[in-house]
Image (cartoon, rainbow, N blue to C red; front, side, top):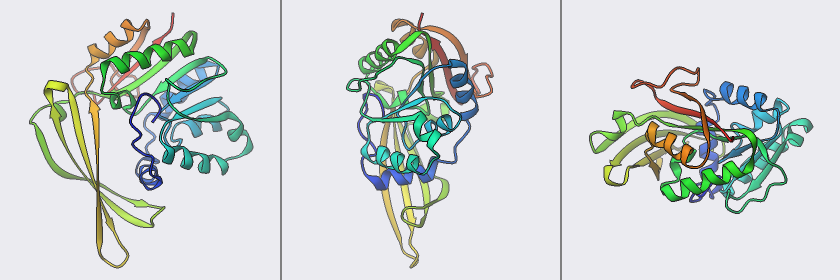
Length: 262
């Protein structure tokens, strides 16, 4: 994805599976669209993936730069964009790379780090570096949107959690139904969550094929995130616990922060 991150989705099959699994997720889009329209200027999305956020913004006339480091993701995003109307294609620029290598011809009014992107960066030093690069790439009074998972006790208590069924979805690339199971283990000394995703493919002949993927996420606490932003020179404007702007509390499932460059 789009920061200082290992390329998790270089394989096109992995990118397609991600697309089929998450393309219907739209919980965050109204808030991101609202902030993008308020920005009244170009928007940068880090870890743009297959365009779940960037394409809807481009359709609304917002100029978006989609930064993505994984080859499979950018290949699929380019294919999806080719089927959009000319205005959307004009509004969306795709860059393969990350913040440490990308060169932009403008500064941005809004930078988006959605859908746990910051948690994929497990080194505190690299998170600081990324946030400083974001600050440098913003116009004065430009905003930064960050969304991460709230460190709920479901994740950080109990050690290793046994595998459980999550959902079933259809992989349009392989034309097979996929059953998703998930387990995780919290490593308290390093404040990391190791997620295992088991994908069970149901073949048309009645047989099955399984594939596992492991993803390591940094667990970020609310005050820790605020500290990172203050340390890198941001002013915190809003801190919410949901996409409808409810206050952060112990029942929250998300941490959503909007910060600005002075």
